[in-house]
Length: 87
Image 1 (tube, one colour):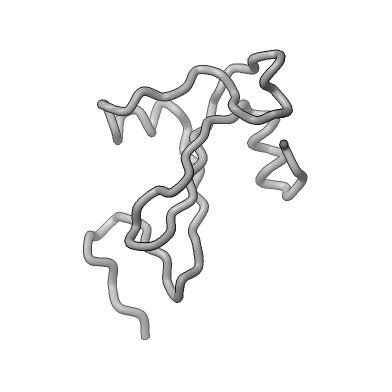
Image 2 (image 1 turned 120 degrees about the vertical axis):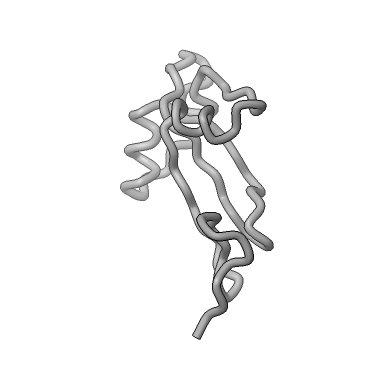
């Protein structure tokens, strides 16, 4: 059986598997008020047209810390969730 994470409510990878989380930008700003969120989609697909960012994506590894954080528009988020490359 896996041990419970040290801090309740915080995602922690089990067995070394990374965890992907997706949060609406408004919710991410409420959870981390000091962190400035990007306003435009950061994927290569949208860099030139500057689509409005709607979702924060994070890869959690190690001890529950976010290793990668980026913002994406609704269309790129949909493509990522469906498994299509959004780069």
